[in-house]
Length: 171
Image 1 (spheres, rainbow, N blue to C red):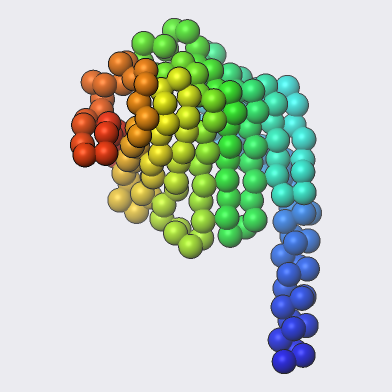
Image 2: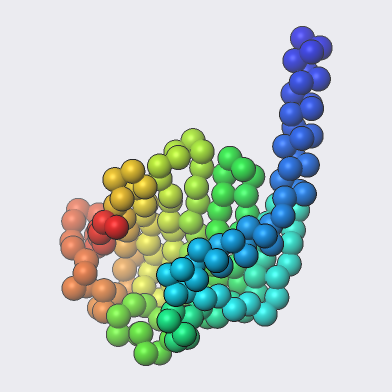
């Protein structure tokens, strides 16, 4: 029993050390490289590291050199078995307001090793509340707009079901 306890303590200390000492900014720069291949650029004013997270302030998103959105705060967090990205105050450029909701107060995407082929998504904003999932094996996206408020611009892409409005697509 003593050996199991020591092994568990060593494992926990090593796991915490890996997470705390992980080069979080290097992961972010690698993400920027991957996005750049798709002509998406991120420009942030401030990057700060926490013990388990990386925080970005005042992020501007460019697609093909055009400013498409600004995000007040982005928080990337990982515990190796569980990862999360949280966006606060996402504001889409005025030129896109006829296609997508202009303001998103909060959006969260989470990934867990307990469900390795699924990413869960939750968001709230001027459109109400939305929850959904991205199935990585089937390559499907399903978003349920539970509390739909101002979604007129999205209705041509949505369909009505028993829970409310739903957006489904594949990639």
